[in-house]
Length: 346
Image (cartoon, rainbow, N blue to C red):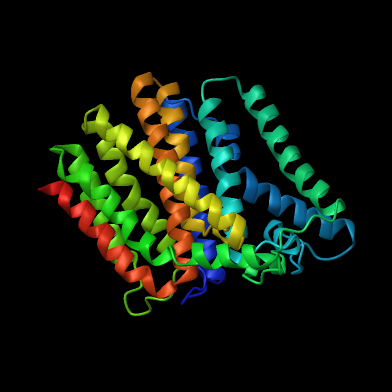
């Protein structure tokens, strides 16, 4: 139900979610006393640190001003982020990122004494609000300038000719992205759990894509990232050294193309990430580190996962440039990436 949402959750929905989170937290804390599960009240407070801190800060500020703590205003954390110039999707993505940092901290501190957990929680809250306060006092604005909206200054005839020339490569890049993945995909034999992952990703892409409103790309960047990530991951894990080397060369070519497009066309908006996209990016980059810290995967596999994350981000940036230049190409690109993933089953 990402922005622009068809259904807006009101008090009933938010209160139910809050009740569920509180109940689950209490149940986990209660289980700590009956079993050897290292879940403390402070640890659950760390997981929910941002919403708890936001509630206490806003209500405390209202009381200090002599107003009712339940009086609505524009001082919530997300309001302050929007005042810095972030878009709706940018605010959601930023809060996803902060919540993930709090979650990683909770996992890292799970077996430490409660006083260390409390000190870490207070430190995270102080760092979060301190950074926000510094950005506000520094009059920092994340709003895009006119140059990022496609209006280019006159930089001479040669510059304009090169800009037009790079623009002509966009239609070719629409097909280069999926076709470049075909060669390694059709040359490997995939079995077991990887196929389950690929099938799940394809199902999610088909369900989440707005087929009736295909120009609505709210979820599209996250869907494309998933569909790019799975074949690259499969090739890096299953293919011989030539497959991994081939993908690295393709990623290098795409880095060169993206850099040229950024210089001549200033596609600054490709770095604006929707909530789903940012969440998937964080999960893909954090999971290898967390799994290695917990001893679940060897160091060699961690390197392959990081390489997959890097290559997937490069493909994603190239895709976002294509879709920003010609949004009508989102459906052909999505279908072609579904075909690439389907070939892994052959």
